Length: 173
Image 1: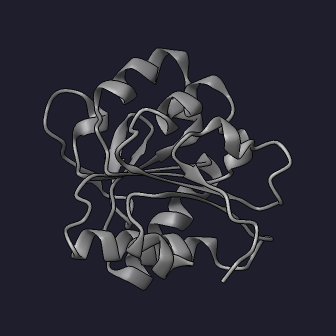
Image 2: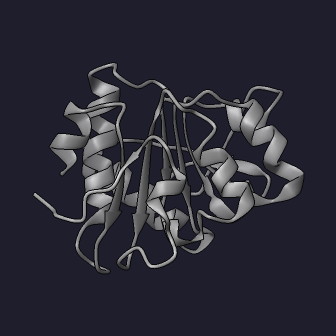
């Protein structure tokens, strides 16, 4: 599926796998290949705060993607060292950014997040929460980019028809 996602860029996808079947690996493969091939230069990864550090570590260890995470009002590297960022919109500080989906959904942050675009790729982990207004605004903000939605369950509360640029394929390769 990762290969198909890269080959059909910027088509969007919903990945609905059980816990532990490698969703983070799949996104790492897709993001790395899109960046290396220059198909994408700006990537926003929105994940639950409780797994941000884990995502950052896996992206660094398995794919040599050293992605800063927006955490507690600043940027941190994989070793929890602060990273200096240019002044201005924090969401635009780095071409590839890992942040809390909850933070991006906050009403007080929504305009900042949207103003920081466009992104070539927006990844939303735990996509069953993506229907909430703030995340949905980010997900649908870039119609010419790729959206990758990940959910640990079959899509009970994620409605693919509400995302016009999303291909929903319940049959995995």
